Image (cartoon, rainbow, N blue to C red; front, side, top):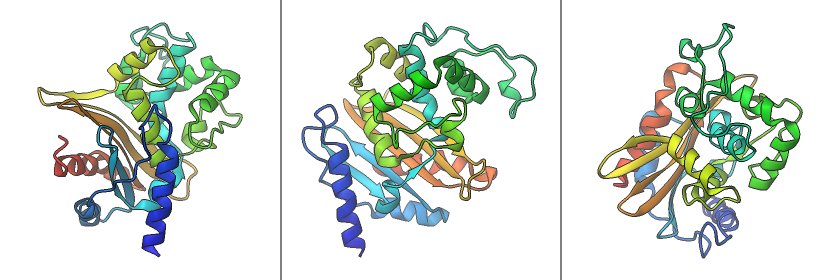
Length: 271
């Protein structure tokens, strides 16, 4: 049964990565992933990770079945909310202050501030991104979601919560496909907009590598809350794109999203 499941996921990956913008051939070369399995098992976490080596057109993967399962993207959608906002001219650049804090109650103290895309994505400032989505509007947002082929391509009628509470859903495999195109500036969007989004997603830059990423946590009105960490690593001329998600019911476990992912990347010597 596990062999059949893995073959099915290989087929899904092949279909995901078929376009030339992502790879010349379908991804068909999985490598030994036992070390990744051990990392998840040692933390007692039910989740998945997909790591795609763009140059070698190969991947590492833990939990094949879950990698193809769609979940609410939560704050990982801020990456593409930013891209759409820039491309539609709703904000002129990543440093324009487009959100003004009005003194209303907010979930985090750090959100009590005016925001640009550059600052808002670092703070994962939900009110700012809700404002951005409202400015984009339902019609333009839906058109862009279809243009991107983002997950199930459905945003429903609630323009400022569809990525947090549905109906929009996306899988780890689909996240990797989109992020690969973004990291290579190969999405059907202006190069300047794609470059700015790549710039604001940098989490860490060293002499050896640059790490891009965004976390997310969908926890409201959901039977099983899910945590995300997605992004990519640029190292020695190589590009390694990743998407991790996990069941996450307790806020105390939020750091696991990044710590597990970073441990996987270090184990594979990608950091």
